[in-house]
Length: 499
Image 1 (cartoon, rainbow, N blue to C red):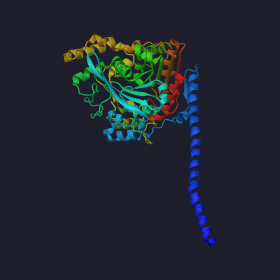
Image 2: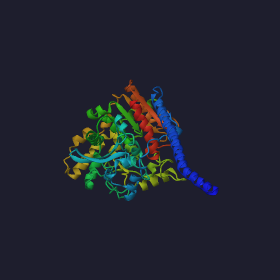
Image 3: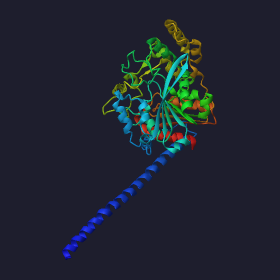
Image 4: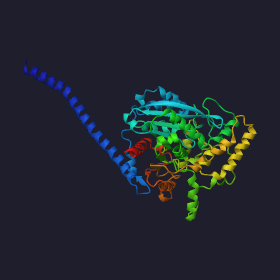
C-alpha cells in the first residue's frame, strides 16, 4: 500500500471512529446535563414546599403570604404524560368545548396520568329526583394512596369544566392535581348539561339540568329553582363520595360550596372520613357568621360590611325566588376577571375580559345561580318567611303534581345558619391576593377570611388553624388563571396536613 493510500485509509478510520464516539459522548453529556438540571428542579420544589410548610407552621400570625416569585416558581413535577394534548383535542372537537365527560373513560390512563370515570348519582329529596355528576380521577402515582381523596365542588354558576380545563381547553387545576392525588370534581345539581346550553345566558329558556336525561316543564324548573337548598346539594355530594371513594377525604368547596365542606363535618359518615380537617379556596365561612360579623363591626363603629340583604341589593324590591341570577360582564368585572385570565390580551379592561369570558364559556358553563343558594350562603335567614310563602304560592298555582311537602322544605331552609364551628383539628383557608370578595389587599385585617379564621380559632383553641395568601395578582378564579402553580401550591398544603 502506498503512503498516500495508507493516509486515506487512516482518515477513513478516524472519521468512522469519530462518528461512533462523538455521538456517544454527546449523549453522555446530555444525560449529565439532564441529571444536573433535574436535581436543582427537585431541590427547588422541595425548598418551595418547605417554605409553604414553614409558613403554615407559624401558629402566631393571623395570616401568612407566599410571595409572588415563589408561587410562580411552583409547578415542577406536575406535567401530564401527553402534555394535556388528548383532552384538549377532545374539547376542541366539541361545540364550544362542551365535550362529553363520558368520552374521557375511553382515554388510556397512561396517557392522562390518571384513570377517568364519569359518575352520575340519582337521588330523591322533597319527593323529586335529582342528578349529581362527579368526574373521578384516580391518580397513577402510587403515593396518592397516602393522602385523602381530594373532593372539589364548584361554586355558583360553574361546573366541572372550570376545574378540568382552562378557558382555552388546556389542562386545568384538577388534571395537574391528579398527577399526585386522587381527585373527584363534583358538579352541583343543575349546573352541568350534556352538550351544554344553546340558549343565550339571559334567556329564560336557559334552565338548570336537574335531570340529565330529560327536559322539564317551566313550572317544574321554577319550583326546583326554589328548592335547590344546601340540604339537597349535601345529600348528592354524600352519595358520590360514599359510593365511589374509599378512605379519608379532604373537601374543598370553591366559593358558595365552602358551606358544603362545613356541613359535611357534622355528617356522621363524612365527618368520620374528614377527621376534623378543613381546606378552603375562596370559600369564606359559615353563613351564620355574616350576621355575627355585622353586629361586631357595628359595635366597633365600623359599619356593616355584610351586604344588606337581597332586598337591598335589588333596590328594595325582592326578585321573585324562582328567577335565576344570571351572570353578566358587570358582575364578572369586579374581582373575578384579572390580567392573568387566559383570555386576556394587552390593552383589555376588566370588563372586556369578562365579556370575552362569558362569550367563550357561554355554552358549557351554567352561568346562572339559584337565588336560594345566595340567600342561604349570605346568612339572610330573615328572608325565610318570604321564601316559604313564595314556594307555597308556586305549589298552589301548579297544583303540586309532584307531591312536595312544604314542611320538609321548611325544615331544611337555611340549615347553614346552624352550622357547628367546633370539632376541628386542622383548618387551612387559601385565598388569592386580588380576590376582593375574600381579601382586602390594602387592609388585610378587614378581610372576611381573617374574621372567619379568628372566630374558628376561638372555638377550636387546640386546633391548627391557618390562613395563607397566594401573592400573585390572582382573582377568585386563580385555579383558571394559574392552574399548574395552584395545583402545586394546594398539593403542598395537603401534604402539610399529614407531614
